[in-house]
Picture 1 (tube, rainbow, N blue to C red):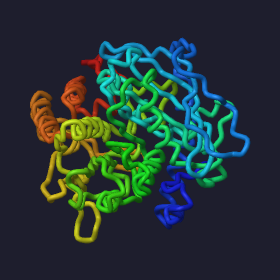
Picture 2 (picture 1 turned 180 degrees about the horizontal axis):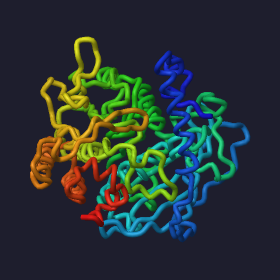
Picture 3 (picture 1 turned 30 degrees about the horizontal axis):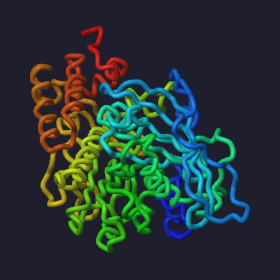
Length: 468
């Protein structure tokens, strides 16, 4: 059983010794994530065509006899055709990255998804360290390939630890990490991530011209990003960091101290401990924090392409994913055009520090100035009490009439108005808002939440219920 360890580094030993409820939370995460292993490790059934990339030189796989530093190298990859996204043909490159960090040698897998014609990229590479169970979940489950690829992003996944799927692809022979720190009987070396990001700028046959590099990861894979920011190693490497569902760090202190001069956007669920992440206004030109009321640590992925039933499917419609996608693009514009993202958000709290809740029992969201801001429309309407957790749930589901609407049409008008406010606040993209509104209208007289509960297959497929 792998322990979910936010620090994972002997140099930050205080992060290894959470007490009481924090330990229980970590144990629960480890248990549930272990259950996901069989699900997310299942083959996707994609039709692949693998060939050696003709323009990349083969890396010398032999180690230096004296164990000294070697030049970091990307091996000649195999190529998988991924298909077309918004008219851009993408390929996936699977290879091995080898060399040495300041603490020792390594040989780890990498996986790059990029336009076959590198002139079609938008000049931005999104680097994701692999999660110890889920792998490249920021790409495959949350942001999703279609979202990134039709906009020309390059995605680059990297192994950085020998703990579980942090290695990215455990089937690759000959992988090792000799530096870094001991971590649950494995070796973890965060520095591999920054070395990989630097090497991408010299890999133009694969990724084209690199104008910007972003880092993202969720939960377990967000923590090395936060550690690299704290150590100063991310400075000058990543223009933007987007840690998702993270906790236990204070990146604003790192920004103020000058350890990192890029921009940071953190997106958390209600379940995550955001105490140290709340925007204190000390770095307004470089830091944003957003939290989504009612959302669990692992939201329902809906139509994520998994062959087996995902263990959180059908548990709650509340999710931070629409906000994540909106804030990711806002961060992209922040870097490119200095376009300022929305004000940071937080959950309203009472004098005793507990979360303030509305009459339905849902958490109230406000911006960092204390002004109440829109929530997900079904949360705003009080369609149910949305219960956060490692995985979520809900209860007290209310009908259209119980919500006070005479007809489904009246309900739908109110839903559309709440959704428009959420979109105007820039917490959801127009494309995701359009899908959300369609789901609310699929099965009259049912609400959005009732359709999720009673017609889940239709809800996921965004198709009208047969009975309607």
